[in-house]
Amino acid sequence: MADHLEASVTLPSDPASVSAARAYVVGTLAEWGLPEDTEVSDSIRLIISELATNAVQHTFGQSPTFTVDVALDRDEHLRIGVTDSHPRLPRRLPAAVQQDNGRGLVIIRWLIAECGGRLRIRPTREGGKTISIELPWTVPAQPVPAAGQQEP
Image (cartoon, rainbow, N blue to C red; front, side):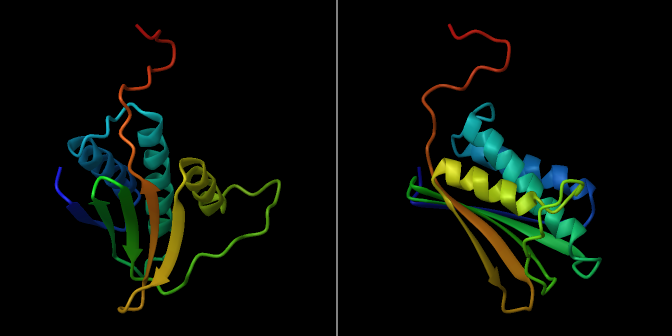
């Protein structure tokens, strides 16, 4: 594999774009050798869903698009970033029992920690922000069996 691979897609800030972002990232990673039916792929799928949802829901219509960047460096580090043009940085909301949203970054931080990665939030030069994750690149030897299936 090459020393550095990159892929990027810009999508409209629309709820339908969340599934498009998820499919784009999972498809790209499959092309790079990460099977879609692994625990790591499932974690990445959830992380992208949360990041893309935040880019759509929390920009209050002030970011007409968001961009998803995927990069793999020397088969060691996977970086995925979601950039929008809204200047407000995410903030932690107080945990409330009846709260229906606001837990996305908590979920992301937990998944990243479980995978041995890290989260970065930084403003862009254009006045928006990028929320990115970095994970160690580990391609499993064999796919994880789906629920209800037995291993050979």
